[in-house]
Structures are given as structure tokens and as C-alpha cells.
Amino acid sequence: MKLVIVESPTKAKTIRKFLGKEYRVEASMGHVRDLPASADQIPKEIKGEDWARIGVDVEHGFTPVYIVQPEKKKVVADLKKALEDATELFVATDEDREGESIGWHLVQVLKPKVPIHRMVFHEITEEAIKKALASPRAIDEHLVQAQETRRVLDRLVGYIVSPLLWKKVKPKLSAGRVQSVAVRLLVLRERERVAFVSGTYWDVKAQLEKSKAPFESQLVSLGSTRLATGKDFDETTGKVSSGANVLLLSEDQARELEAKLKGKPFKVASVETRSQTRSPSPPFTTSTLQQEANRKLGLSARRTMQVAQRLYENGFITYMRTDSTNLSEEAITASRSLVERKYGREFLSEKPRQYTTKSKGAQEAHEAIRPAGTLMPTADELKLDGPEHRVYDMIW
Image 1 (cartoon, helix red, strand yellow):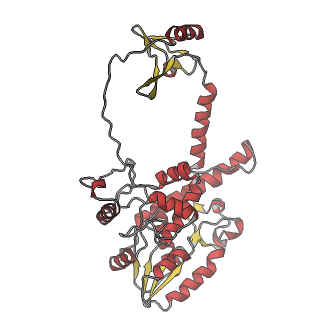
Image 2 (image 1 turned 90 degrees about the vertical axis):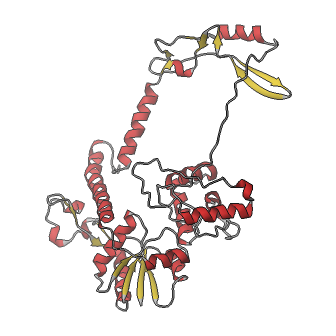
Image 3 (image 1 turned 180 degrees about the horizontal axis):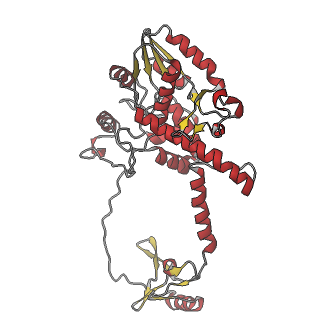
């Protein structure tokens, strides 16, 4: 028997459908080890150390001390039992830093005496799973170290700075590697808002019509002098910026111009034509999926990821944690075939569009979020409902 370990029962259930009886698929229920969360979890051998409370040996290379979480002891025992009958172990956790770390910790705890394989896939389809089984790799220590570094920083900032906030600011406040930086950005922005001084300017607009097509025009200059707009003001004084060669209309001047222009015929002096091209939006990354789901569906970022996680684990979309807009050749071919079949060849571009990821740290090996597989059925065809239907439909 070959043992395959994933994070969640849903993911395990989906993968079981694609594998034969020679495979057993079990779930670790996420991380099985972590830093001690409370005083009673600190190992006896380090309780006397000054750094024991944070679970990181700051005196010797910031070495973390890991424990099997109390609620995971039964999970670990069950996995060890399953491993007794296994001839091979396949670690099939997610293909990101967190997934790599979960896999590494599993190996450290289970101490398997059989060959260990790391299988990775970005979609849970039969083809993807069998391809991953056929081409496994070793656990990537660099990814493990990257996750460990982040975890240690989380603990150092949270456990050291939070008590300082309790003393100096307010009890029960928390600090964090990410949240404290975000709070600083909010504070800086709020200071800008408080320091902002508003200014007043008047403009003149006319509602016109030509061939029963209404449109709005705006007075932009008098003679050769441009009229002041909001961008001409100094936000710290509320006055027109020094050196700005503009005319600031008062209310009386604007009303006087209105009276002179009202009812008068307007003539088009010239027409300027510009060609505009609007390209389709690139495929979703994690952040753009969250933004659009909030804008179009009213879902919070957390709720969006919960829904996307379920869609991924059930084999409906590719992995939802990605910063890449890349698509595989197979996905591009499948999507173009779908467009031609469903809408007609005239809706296909001459050649596939190529998108580049703007983020400097993007992991280009990952794909963007897309419907899993090559058939790419609609949400209705999959018989999805509720938020799963709406999020999948948006991705589709």
C-alpha cells in the first residue's frame, strides 16, 4: 500500500476518486507541529530559559522549538498507524511555502522508514494527480526555511511587542509582522487626511444635445488662461499652489458667466478623434480575485478564500493562492477550444494573449486561478449553488 497525505478531508476525498486500491489517502488536518502556544506546552527541558516563553532560541541562531499540538496527537497517531502498512509515502500538501512546511513537519514527526516522495499539483483532477505521482520530487528545504523564517518573525514580533502595547497603549491589543505595518500605513494616511485643508473653486458646465444625443461640456479656460481645478490646490493650505498660472473663479463670476451663456447657441470648433483599445483583464491572482469578489459579490477577502478553498479541494478550480497570471499551454488550448465551441471562431483573438506578472517576487512557476481541467464546465453544469456558484462563475 502507498500512503498519500494531504491537509484536508475534502481534498483527500476528491483524490481518492482518482486512485486505485493500492493507494490510501489520509488528511493531516493542517499543521501537526507548531511553536508552543501557552506556558503548559513549553517542553520541560527549556522552561528555565529566558526565551522559553516565545519558543524561539534567540541565543543560538533563532532556532524554533516545535511541539506536536495537543489536538493533533490523535491525528499523528493515526498517520503513524497507517504508515506501518505502507511501502511508500507521498506528501501531497499544497504547492506553496506553507504546504511544503506541513509536509516537512509530517516527515519529521512520522519518521518514515519507507521512500518519501513530494508530489505537487495545482489542480485536483485525475490527469494532474496521476502526473504528480509519476514525477515526484524531494521536499524543498528552501521553501521550508522561508516559511520557518516567517513563523519565527511572527512569534518574535507578536510575543515581544504585544506586551509593550498592553503597558503603554491599551490592554488586549496585539502587534504582528503584517498588521503592525498595515496600522502604520493607516495612521500615516489618517494624518494626511487630518492635515488636509479644503479649498473652494467654481466651474461652469453646460448640458448640450446633438442629434438627440445629450452630452456635457465644461468651461476649461477664459481667453488663454486655464480655469483652476482641484489639482491646482495646495492640500496643506487650501489655496491655489504658488506658481500655478490659473484663474480661480468666484461664485459671482461663475454665476455671471452662467447668465451670459444660458440659452446661447454652441458651436463645435474642432473634433479630436482618439482610438482606444481595451484588453480583457488578466486571469485572477489571489489578490485580484479577492478584490473582484468584494466589488462584484460583496464577499470579504476571508470569505472569498474560504469559498475558493472549497472549490479547489473539490477539483473545480486550480490552486487559489498564487501571484502569477501565467496559464499553462494546456489551459490556453482548452480555453480557446471552449470559446470557439461555445461562441464561435470570430470571438477568438488571432493568437493567445500573454500576460506578465507585475510583482517582482511573483512565483512564475504557478498558474493563475482558472477552472480546473480541460473541459472547463460552467457553474450550472457543475450544479454549484450559493457563493460557490458566484465565485466559480466569476473565475470562469
